[in-house]
Length: 308
Image (cartoon, helix red, strand yellow):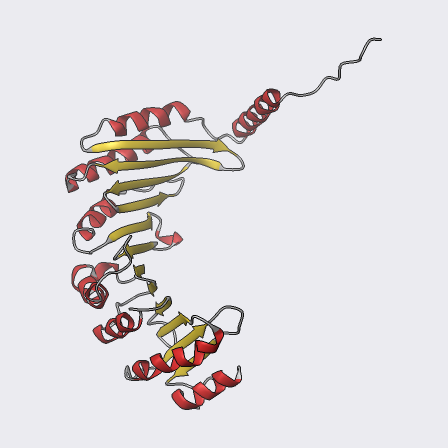
C-alpha cells in the first residue's frame, strides 16, 4: 500500500518567507536599507580611543520600525574629550550615511553611569553637548547616574535617575539630605528635569522646575530611613509634597501613620500622606488641608492632623 506523503511548509521556509515579505514591505515603503552603513559605523566607533565595547543594532521592518541603536562602553579613565569625540563620530556617521526615516538611540556607559540620547529621524544635532554635561554631572553627583534625554525638545526633557546607595541600599542619611542643595549648586540648569532618586527603599521624584528645600530633604531622609517609601516633590502641584509608605500589616496602619504625622506637621506646609498595606484600602491624610470621606480611620486622622 502506497502512503501519500503530505507536503508542508517547514520552519526554515516560513522564516525565509517572513524575511522576504519584510524586505519587500520595507522597500515598498521607500525606507533605505542602511545595514552595511550601520555595520561600518559600529566598526568605526569600536576603533575610537577609550572605547571598550560597542553593541550596534540595526532594525528595518514595519512592525519594529527603522532604527540604529548603539550602546558604547568607555574605559574607566575616559576623558571628556574622548566621550565627546565618540558622540560626534556617531552623529557624523548617522548623517553622512543618510539614515533618513530612521530613529536612533545613542547610549554611553562609563562605570556605573550612563546616558541615553534619543534622536528623531531628522537627527538634528550631535549628542556631544548632552554627553559633555553628563560627564561633568557624574563627577559632581554621588551614586550611579542614568540620564535619558531627547534631542528634540518637543518630545520632553527626559529624566535623570540617581541611585545613591546601590547595591547595598544602606546609605547614610547625609547622602540624601545634602542632595538637593548639591544639585542646586552644581546643576541649576537641570532643575526642570524629572529627577528620580533611589535611596534605601525610597523612590523620590523631583518634578521641577526647582529643587526642594533643605527642610524637605531632611524630613524625607528622616522618615525614609526605615520602611518602603514613595515621595513626589512637585512645586507646580498642590500640595507640593506627597509621601506614601507601606505598613507591614493592615492592623499596623494607624500606628505607622501616628509615628510619622507629627514629624510631618512640623514642616508647616500642606503635605499629602498615604499609608498602605496589603489587602486593604489605603488611608490618606492631608496635612494643612481638609480631606473628607474615606474610611473611619482616614476620617479620624484627617480630623486630628488636617484642618477639617
